[in-house]
Structure formats: structure tokens, C-alpha cells
Amino acid sequence: MPDNTPHSSLDKKQFEELFRAYFVPLCNFAKTYVSDSEAARGITQEVFVNMWEKRQTIDPDKSLKSYLFSSVRNRSLNYIRDHKKFSSRLLDVEIADFETPLEQDDLELSELQDRVNAAVNSLPEKIKKSFVMNRYEGLKYREIADKLEISQKTVEAHISKALKLLREALKDFMIVLFLLLFQ
Image (tube, rainbow, N blue to C red):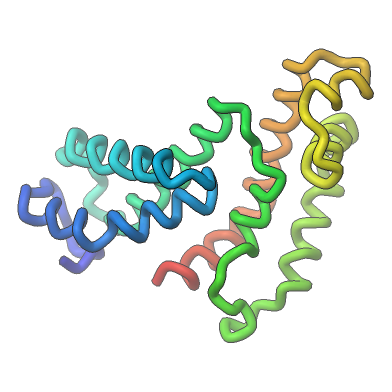
């Protein structure tokens, strides 16, 4: 089924075609975030169940493929947040840790790294400090809280805010990368 056609109401046959076409790729996509096959499968199943339940309200101007991948990404990030397992490689996964060679799409890995570094350097100082200690030094929230003499909840808030700000700062670049990788 072409996923760019209008779909004011998704019927059972269309849904089954989408499920067959995208379930495995979406599970693999979720696994890049959560690194757990069972969790990735559960996230993907939840997305399909939610899509079926909300099939009447899905925006007919949006691509179903984009809707599915965005939903899996968001649920994967929620899973990470809810399980307090912010991977030290989260930004690598979101930006550069795909097996597709970026060079053939005229994107340079060094440019990606420069953009990430600039975005990290633009974070507010306290948030940046917590993020760098977690992301680059591999410290756990409790360790960061002890070193900075702040609460663990504050560290969690800093990391969450850092990820939100970084996704926002890199959103234009990530859309291009997403389109190149999942066309």
C-alpha cells in the first residue's frame, strides 16, 4: 500500500498490509533505542494497536510510514525515560549510529559530530555539566548527584531537559537524516 495516499479511515486490509510491511523494520528501529528485542517488539505492537484504535483520527495528509516511525521513536524514548536507562549512546543512535554509509548521501560524519558538539556546548551550564558527566563520562545519576551536590531528581531533570534541547537544536538535521535512512 502506498503510504502517501490519503487514508481518512484505515480498513482492516490496509492495516494488515502495513503491519506485514513495517513490523520487522519498526522492531529493528526500536531496538536501536532500547537494545532489547522483547521491549522493541512490545513497543512496536503498542504502536500498531494505538494506530488501529485511532485510525479515524490519523491525519490524512501525513505519511503512514512517517507516522509509524515517529510513534516508535517516541515510545522508545518514553520507555528509556520510564526505565531510567538513558543510554550513553542515545545521541549516537539518533544521529549517526546507523549502518547506512552517510558518505554516499553527501553527509560527512565530521559534520554530524560538529553539529552535536555545538548543540551540547549551547546547553545551559548546569544542564550541560550533568549531561556530559552522564553521556561522556558514563556516570550514573546518583554519582552525578553526589559529585554536584544536588538531588538525583535534579540530575534526571537536567538529562531530560538536555535531551529535549538537543533534539530541538538538531531537529532540522535529524529530519534530513531520517528521510535519507528510511525512504
